Length: 132
Image 1: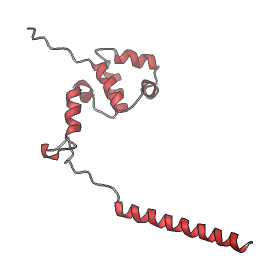
Image 2: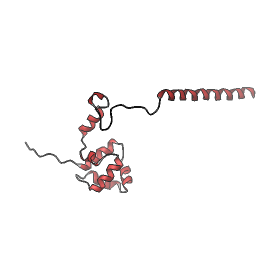
Image 3: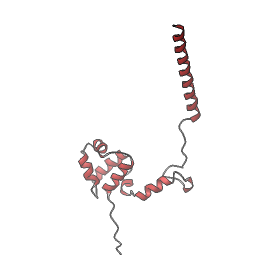
Image 4: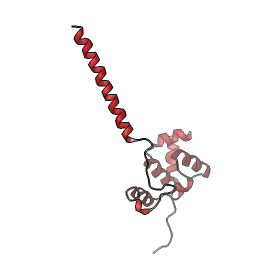
């Protein structure tokens, strides 16, 4: 049995992160100012130029280390922790997801808009009825 570890394929990691972020090669290419074929070539490369890797990381919104150490297993572990806060914190996040708005305010706002729409409709119908 061999103890040789499989080298980390940076291009494949870029591809998977890009796909997870629902970004097409064309969008990444445009952001980098290169062709889609060049992005394809980068994603097929085991190693990527460090300067280009920094640019790609910025566009994908991840760190260079995240690209280098990316693994499918870590992604599944990360997303599984959203359902189970007992596993502790994720990065700098404490597991609490707070709304930036009050949901009740949004319901009241919607109700007020619906009431106003009904008032407007009634006024319009009254004008039509008086016009006959």
